[in-house]
Length: 184
Image 1 (tube, rainbow, N blue to C red):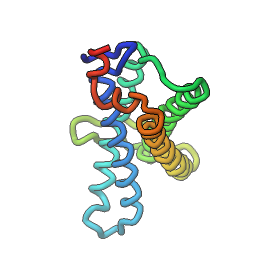
Image 2 (image 1 turned 45 degrees about the horizontal axis):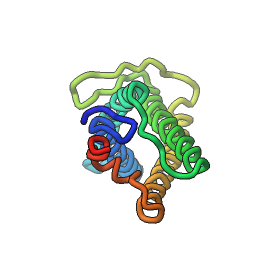
Image 3 (image 1 turned 135 degrees about the vertical axis):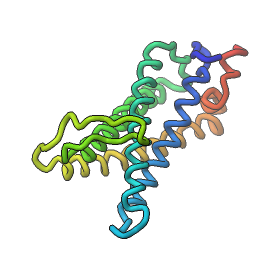
Image 4 (image 1 turned 45 degrees about the vertical axis):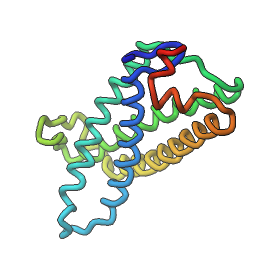
């Protein structure tokens, strides 16, 4: 089932969820690794190109993800009311931090007025550039927001394991397979 139902997530939501998780952790690791590269390192210019290209693709997918999420039904939540509220707030923070990280990355990359080449397919123009200390300020926001996003994503994963193993709920299973949506 491609779309969501009140009983489970559809394949589109599941694939985007796990691709986003992979991208968040992968881009964080790549970004962290890049900060240690020296100017004469082979990867000094290539790694940021990959980081920016993947980041822009993730931004585009994330915009689609938000539209998809708003257009689709949300499966019925499990757990106590406080857990449901915490999950709702946590999901909202994850979405917000993803966009803060991506927009601040864009502002770092375009601070000098040059667009971002995305795998050589197209260039995202520098719509905002030349602000005082743009790269430095956006860099600080990018760094701290990325850390907050990764920490929150780890907490999100741990909460899913708690719901699966301790509470014996199908929260994790519903995000691994669309079968729950078909068999309820």
